[in-house]
Image (cartoon, rainbow over all chains, first blue to last red; front, side, top):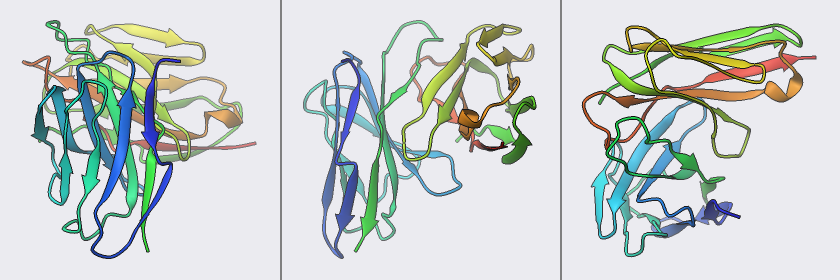
Length: 116
Length: 113
């Protein structure tokens, strides 16, 4: 089945701990994205990557880090510097095209992160 | 960054009623997308719109790309309990095909049987 796989579904973080959320896609998409969703809030962009070994900060990058060593994988690390990490985290991917109208993003099922 | 104003924020409707929600922006968008998110899941694409004035249907759902390219609406006809969820609009800003989508804050739909 083609798609985007996020793991784990639920994750707990202790005080001062770094945790890493996994995102893998087999859609052969160039671009990948990480969003944070808080209750009653929309989707806020954390980081995105349009090509391997390159990534850009989104609107709320502080306290997070990413890597893009492979086209299929875009892991997100929530560092101890992120003081309020409890949220639902969504990964997405899309093609990159020369056309202006083909940037449809497809989402994974999400990871819910809670602080112990 | 750019923002989309999505309204209403939430809706409570009776089963069988029609629903309408919309998104507006102060700037031009090249593409409008509508997603639905079920509780605890990721958003799923419902409808994609690519041209100003375009009207597209997907079953009981109908969406339109506004003529000014600054707005879009989504209608759901004859709502059923499984329509419950959060509906997001998203847009591809004009002038660039490679900037991330901009998302509205969502419309939370509750259906009373």
